[in-house]
Length: 335
Image (tube, rainbow, N blue to C red; front, top):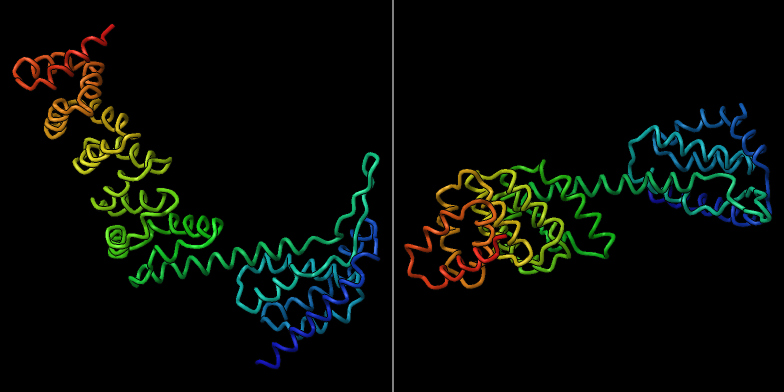
Protein backbone atom coordinates (compact mmCIF):
# COMPACT_ATOMS: atom_id res chain seq x y z
CA UNK A 1 0.00 0.00 0.00
CA UNK A 2 2.82 2.37 0.94
CA UNK A 3 4.72 1.47 -2.24
CA UNK A 4 1.62 2.14 -4.33
CA UNK A 5 1.15 5.55 -2.70
CA UNK A 6 4.79 6.41 -3.37
CA UNK A 7 4.38 5.42 -7.02
CA UNK A 8 1.30 7.63 -7.25
CA UNK A 9 3.15 10.56 -5.73
CA UNK A 10 6.00 9.99 -8.18
CA UNK A 11 3.68 9.90 -11.16
CA UNK A 12 1.86 13.02 -9.98
CA UNK A 13 5.17 14.81 -9.48
CA UNK A 14 6.28 13.83 -12.99
CA UNK A 15 3.03 15.20 -14.40
CA UNK A 16 3.45 18.45 -12.48
CA UNK A 17 7.00 18.92 -13.74
CA UNK A 18 5.91 18.31 -17.31
CA UNK A 19 3.08 20.82 -16.93
CA UNK A 20 5.34 23.47 -15.40
CA UNK A 21 7.91 23.21 -18.18
CA UNK A 22 5.28 23.93 -20.80
CA UNK A 23 3.02 26.32 -18.88
CA UNK A 24 4.49 29.47 -20.44
CA UNK A 25 5.51 28.11 -23.83
CA UNK A 26 2.46 26.41 -25.34
CA UNK A 27 -0.24 28.64 -26.73
CA UNK A 28 -3.31 27.19 -28.41
CA UNK A 29 -6.46 28.62 -29.95
CA UNK A 30 -10.01 28.24 -28.67
CA UNK A 31 -10.75 26.21 -31.77
CA UNK A 32 -7.95 23.75 -30.99
CA UNK A 33 -9.28 23.34 -27.46
CA UNK A 34 -12.82 22.72 -28.70
CA UNK A 35 -11.59 20.23 -31.26
CA UNK A 36 -9.52 18.19 -28.84
CA UNK A 37 -12.29 18.16 -26.23
CA UNK A 38 -14.80 16.87 -28.79
CA UNK A 39 -12.45 14.42 -30.52
CA UNK A 40 -13.41 10.76 -30.60
CA UNK A 41 -9.94 9.77 -29.48
CA UNK A 42 -10.26 11.77 -26.27
CA UNK A 43 -13.73 10.37 -25.63
CA UNK A 44 -12.44 6.83 -26.08
CA UNK A 45 -9.55 7.47 -23.71
CA UNK A 46 -11.88 8.92 -21.07
CA UNK A 47 -14.21 5.93 -21.41
CA UNK A 48 -11.35 3.51 -20.83
CA UNK A 49 -9.88 5.47 -17.89
CA UNK A 50 -13.08 6.14 -15.96
CA UNK A 51 -12.95 2.67 -14.44
CA UNK A 52 -9.60 3.45 -12.82
CA UNK A 53 -11.11 6.56 -11.23
CA UNK A 54 -14.20 4.68 -10.07
CA UNK A 55 -12.15 2.10 -8.18
CA UNK A 56 -9.56 4.66 -7.00
CA UNK A 57 -6.71 3.01 -8.88
CA UNK A 58 -4.74 6.19 -9.42
CA UNK A 59 -1.38 4.49 -9.96
CA UNK A 60 -2.77 2.94 -13.14
CA UNK A 61 -4.70 6.08 -14.06
CA UNK A 62 -1.65 8.34 -13.90
CA UNK A 63 0.46 5.74 -15.70
CA UNK A 64 -1.96 5.77 -18.63
CA UNK A 65 -2.38 9.55 -18.56
CA UNK A 66 1.34 10.22 -18.87
CA UNK A 67 1.44 8.17 -22.09
CA UNK A 68 -1.11 10.47 -23.78
CA UNK A 69 0.20 13.46 -25.80
CA UNK A 70 0.10 16.65 -23.66
CA UNK A 71 -2.82 18.48 -25.31
CA UNK A 72 -4.99 15.37 -25.38
CA UNK A 73 -3.92 14.54 -21.84
CA UNK A 74 -5.21 17.88 -20.58
CA UNK A 75 -8.51 17.33 -22.38
CA UNK A 76 -8.79 13.85 -20.85
CA UNK A 77 -8.04 15.21 -17.36
CA UNK A 78 -10.69 17.87 -17.85
CA UNK A 79 -13.32 15.30 -18.81
CA UNK A 80 -12.29 12.97 -16.00
CA UNK A 81 -13.03 15.80 -13.57
CA UNK A 82 -16.45 16.15 -15.20
CA UNK A 83 -16.91 12.42 -14.66
CA UNK A 84 -15.86 12.81 -11.02
CA UNK A 85 -18.56 15.46 -10.60
CA UNK A 86 -21.20 13.12 -12.03
CA UNK A 87 -19.87 10.12 -10.08
CA UNK A 88 -20.35 12.01 -6.83
CA UNK A 89 -18.98 9.69 -4.16
CA UNK A 90 -15.48 10.50 -2.93
CA UNK A 91 -13.03 8.68 -0.72
CA UNK A 92 -9.63 9.81 0.55
CA UNK A 93 -7.79 8.50 -2.51
CA UNK A 94 -10.15 10.31 -4.90
CA UNK A 95 -9.87 13.49 -2.86
CA UNK A 96 -6.06 13.28 -2.94
CA UNK A 97 -6.05 12.83 -6.73
CA UNK A 98 -8.49 15.69 -7.25
CA UNK A 99 -6.41 17.91 -4.98
CA UNK A 100 -3.36 17.08 -7.10
CA UNK A 101 -5.23 18.25 -10.19
CA UNK A 102 -5.85 21.63 -8.59
CA UNK A 103 -2.08 22.02 -8.10
CA UNK A 104 -1.20 21.43 -11.75
CA UNK A 105 0.16 24.46 -13.55
CA UNK A 106 -1.68 25.27 -16.81
CA UNK A 107 0.13 23.45 -19.61
CA UNK A 108 -1.73 25.31 -22.36
CA UNK A 109 -2.92 28.88 -22.61
CA UNK A 110 -5.37 30.71 -24.81
CA UNK A 111 -4.80 34.34 -25.72
CA UNK A 112 -7.91 36.46 -26.24
CA UNK A 113 -7.89 39.75 -28.10
CA UNK A 114 -9.70 42.48 -26.18
CA UNK A 115 -10.33 46.12 -27.07
CA UNK A 116 -6.73 47.20 -27.28
CA UNK A 117 -5.38 44.52 -24.96
CA UNK A 118 -4.59 40.81 -24.79
CA UNK A 119 -5.83 38.41 -22.12
CA UNK A 120 -4.04 35.13 -21.46
CA UNK A 121 -6.01 32.41 -19.70
CA UNK A 122 -5.73 28.71 -19.08
CA UNK A 123 -7.05 26.55 -21.92
CA UNK A 124 -8.55 24.04 -19.48
CA UNK A 125 -10.34 24.92 -16.24
CA UNK A 126 -10.63 21.64 -14.41
CA UNK A 127 -8.62 22.74 -11.38
CA UNK A 128 -11.41 24.87 -9.93
CA UNK A 129 -13.95 22.09 -10.47
CA UNK A 130 -11.69 19.60 -8.73
CA UNK A 131 -11.16 21.95 -5.80
CA UNK A 132 -14.90 22.47 -5.45
CA UNK A 133 -15.45 18.71 -5.24
CA UNK A 134 -12.79 18.35 -2.55
CA UNK A 135 -14.19 21.20 -0.47
CA UNK A 136 -17.70 19.77 -0.69
CA UNK A 137 -16.43 16.34 0.39
CA UNK A 138 -14.49 17.82 3.30
CA UNK A 139 -17.62 19.61 4.47
CA UNK A 140 -19.62 16.38 4.25
CA UNK A 141 -17.02 14.70 6.46
CA UNK A 142 -17.26 17.59 8.88
CA UNK A 143 -21.04 17.25 9.02
CA UNK A 144 -20.77 13.53 9.77
CA UNK A 145 -18.15 14.19 12.44
CA UNK A 146 -20.31 16.86 14.09
CA UNK A 147 -23.42 14.68 14.18
CA UNK A 148 -21.57 11.66 15.52
CA UNK A 149 -19.87 13.68 18.26
CA UNK A 150 -23.08 15.49 19.20
CA UNK A 151 -25.13 12.32 19.44
CA UNK A 152 -22.34 10.70 21.45
CA UNK A 153 -22.22 13.63 23.87
CA UNK A 154 -18.65 14.40 22.81
CA UNK A 155 -19.11 17.63 20.82
CA UNK A 156 -17.40 20.41 22.81
CA UNK A 157 -18.65 23.58 21.15
CA UNK A 158 -15.95 25.85 22.57
CA UNK A 159 -13.35 23.71 20.78
CA UNK A 160 -15.32 22.84 17.65
CA UNK A 161 -16.13 26.48 16.88
CA UNK A 162 -12.52 27.70 17.09
CA UNK A 163 -10.17 28.58 14.24
CA UNK A 164 -9.81 31.47 11.83
CA UNK A 165 -12.86 33.47 10.76
CA UNK A 166 -13.50 31.28 7.69
CA UNK A 167 -13.29 28.08 9.74
CA UNK A 168 -15.54 29.49 12.47
CA UNK A 169 -18.13 30.61 9.95
CA UNK A 170 -18.10 27.29 8.09
CA UNK A 171 -18.48 25.27 11.27
CA UNK A 172 -21.13 27.61 12.64
CA UNK A 173 -23.21 27.25 9.46
CA UNK A 174 -22.84 23.46 9.52
CA UNK A 175 -23.94 23.39 13.16
CA UNK A 176 -26.97 25.58 12.48
CA UNK A 177 -28.01 23.41 9.52
CA UNK A 178 -27.70 20.15 11.46
CA UNK A 179 -29.06 21.24 14.86
CA UNK A 180 -32.72 20.55 13.93
CA UNK A 181 -31.76 16.95 13.07
CA UNK A 182 -30.18 16.18 16.45
CA UNK A 183 -31.96 14.20 19.13
CA UNK A 184 -33.47 15.93 22.15
CA UNK A 185 -30.83 14.35 24.38
CA UNK A 186 -27.99 15.68 22.20
CA UNK A 187 -29.51 19.17 22.21
CA UNK A 188 -29.85 19.14 26.00
CA UNK A 189 -26.17 18.21 26.38
CA UNK A 190 -25.20 21.08 24.08
CA UNK A 191 -27.44 23.51 25.96
CA UNK A 192 -25.81 22.59 29.27
CA UNK A 193 -22.44 23.67 27.91
CA UNK A 194 -23.58 27.30 27.73
CA UNK A 195 -23.96 27.42 31.49
CA UNK A 196 -20.87 25.35 32.31
CA UNK A 197 -18.26 26.41 29.72
CA UNK A 198 -17.24 30.04 30.16
CA UNK A 199 -15.39 30.02 26.83
CA UNK A 200 -18.70 30.06 24.98
CA UNK A 201 -19.35 33.58 26.26
CA UNK A 202 -16.79 34.79 23.72
CA UNK A 203 -18.50 33.52 20.57
CA UNK A 204 -18.32 36.26 17.90
CA UNK A 205 -22.09 36.38 17.33
CA UNK A 206 -25.35 35.05 18.74
CA UNK A 207 -26.21 32.61 15.96
CA UNK A 208 -25.35 29.40 17.82
CA UNK A 209 -26.66 30.62 21.19
CA UNK A 210 -29.99 31.71 19.72
CA UNK A 211 -30.38 28.45 17.82
CA UNK A 212 -29.62 26.29 20.86
CA UNK A 213 -31.95 28.40 23.00
CA UNK A 214 -34.79 27.94 20.50
CA UNK A 215 -34.13 24.22 20.07
CA UNK A 216 -33.82 23.43 23.79
CA UNK A 217 -35.98 26.08 25.46
CA UNK A 218 -33.30 26.14 28.15
CA UNK A 219 -33.71 29.18 30.41
CA UNK A 220 -29.98 29.37 31.12
CA UNK A 221 -29.15 29.66 27.43
CA UNK A 222 -31.84 32.30 26.97
CA UNK A 223 -30.48 34.24 29.94
CA UNK A 224 -27.04 34.26 28.31
CA UNK A 225 -28.56 35.34 24.98
CA UNK A 226 -30.39 38.31 26.49
CA UNK A 227 -27.32 39.41 28.46
CA UNK A 228 -25.11 39.53 25.38
CA UNK A 229 -24.82 42.40 22.94
CA UNK A 230 -27.76 42.07 20.57
CA UNK A 231 -27.36 41.31 16.88
CA UNK A 232 -29.44 40.02 13.97
CA UNK A 233 -29.62 36.54 15.52
CA UNK A 234 -30.92 37.60 18.93
CA UNK A 235 -33.38 39.96 17.22
CA UNK A 236 -34.58 37.13 14.97
CA UNK A 237 -35.16 34.92 18.02
CA UNK A 238 -37.07 37.72 19.75
CA UNK A 239 -39.30 38.08 16.67
CA UNK A 240 -39.85 34.31 16.57
CA UNK A 241 -40.96 34.35 20.21
CA UNK A 242 -43.29 37.27 19.51
CA UNK A 243 -44.95 35.17 16.81
CA UNK A 244 -45.44 32.33 19.30
CA UNK A 245 -46.90 34.52 22.08
CA UNK A 246 -49.10 34.21 24.07
CA UNK A 247 -47.71 30.71 24.53
CA UNK A 248 -46.44 30.72 28.14
CA UNK A 249 -42.82 29.81 27.31
CA UNK A 250 -42.63 32.46 24.60
CA UNK A 251 -44.22 35.11 26.81
CA UNK A 252 -41.83 34.25 29.62
CA UNK A 253 -38.81 34.79 27.38
CA UNK A 254 -40.22 38.05 26.01
CA UNK A 255 -40.38 39.27 29.58
CA UNK A 256 -36.82 38.03 30.19
CA UNK A 257 -35.59 39.80 27.05
CA UNK A 258 -36.45 43.20 28.53
CA UNK A 259 -33.12 43.09 30.39
CA UNK A 260 -31.38 43.72 27.05
CA UNK A 261 -31.01 47.49 26.46
CA UNK A 262 -31.36 47.17 22.68
CA UNK A 263 -34.16 44.62 22.58
CA UNK A 264 -36.27 45.87 25.48
CA UNK A 265 -38.50 48.23 23.46
CA UNK A 266 -39.47 45.50 20.99
CA UNK A 267 -39.93 43.01 23.81
CA UNK A 268 -42.27 45.35 25.70
CA UNK A 269 -44.23 46.12 22.55
CA UNK A 270 -44.60 42.41 21.78
CA UNK A 271 -46.02 41.89 25.27
CA UNK A 272 -48.29 44.93 25.29
CA UNK A 273 -49.84 44.13 21.91
CA UNK A 274 -51.14 40.76 23.18
CA UNK A 275 -54.95 40.86 23.20
CA UNK A 276 -56.11 40.16 25.79
CA UNK A 277 -53.13 40.59 28.10
CA UNK A 278 -52.36 37.32 29.89
CA UNK A 279 -52.50 37.58 33.66
CA UNK A 280 -48.76 36.97 34.02
CA UNK A 281 -48.07 39.71 31.49
CA UNK A 282 -50.38 42.20 33.24
CA UNK A 283 -48.65 41.51 36.54
CA UNK A 284 -45.21 41.87 34.94
CA UNK A 285 -46.08 45.20 33.30
CA UNK A 286 -47.75 46.46 36.47
CA UNK A 287 -44.56 45.78 38.42
CA UNK A 288 -42.46 47.48 35.76
CA UNK A 289 -44.56 50.66 36.07
CA UNK A 290 -43.14 51.13 39.56
CA UNK A 291 -39.52 50.96 38.37
CA UNK A 292 -37.35 53.99 37.72
CA UNK A 293 -35.48 52.43 34.81
CA UNK A 294 -38.24 51.14 32.52
CA UNK A 295 -41.43 52.44 34.15
CA UNK A 296 -41.78 55.53 31.99
CA UNK A 297 -41.17 53.52 28.81
CA UNK A 298 -43.77 50.91 29.78
CA UNK A 299 -46.31 53.58 30.71
CA UNK A 300 -45.87 55.36 27.39
CA UNK A 301 -46.27 52.13 25.42
CA UNK A 302 -49.39 51.18 27.40
CA UNK A 303 -50.97 54.54 26.70
CA UNK A 304 -50.03 54.29 23.03
CA UNK A 305 -51.69 50.86 22.83
CA UNK A 306 -54.99 51.99 24.38
CA UNK A 307 -54.48 51.11 28.03
CA UNK A 308 -54.91 54.64 29.39
CA UNK A 309 -57.91 53.72 31.55
CA UNK A 310 -56.11 50.78 33.11
CA UNK A 311 -53.01 52.86 33.73
CA UNK A 312 -55.10 55.66 35.25
CA UNK A 313 -56.77 53.16 37.58
CA UNK A 314 -53.40 51.78 38.70
CA UNK A 315 -52.11 55.28 39.42
CA UNK A 316 -55.24 56.22 41.40
CA UNK A 317 -55.10 53.22 43.73
CA UNK A 318 -51.34 53.15 44.18
CA UNK A 319 -49.31 55.19 46.64
CA UNK A 320 -46.12 54.47 44.70
CA UNK A 321 -44.71 57.84 43.73
CA UNK A 322 -42.61 56.39 40.89
CA UNK A 323 -45.69 54.81 39.27
CA UNK A 324 -47.65 58.06 39.55
CA UNK A 325 -44.78 60.03 38.02
CA UNK A 326 -44.52 57.56 35.14
CA UNK A 327 -48.26 57.85 34.57
CA UNK A 328 -48.14 61.64 34.45
CA UNK A 329 -45.16 61.55 32.08
CA UNK A 330 -47.00 59.16 29.71
CA UNK A 331 -50.15 61.34 29.73
CA UNK A 332 -48.06 64.44 29.01
CA UNK A 333 -46.83 62.79 25.82
CA UNK A 334 -50.37 62.43 24.45
CA UNK A 335 -51.09 64.60 21.39
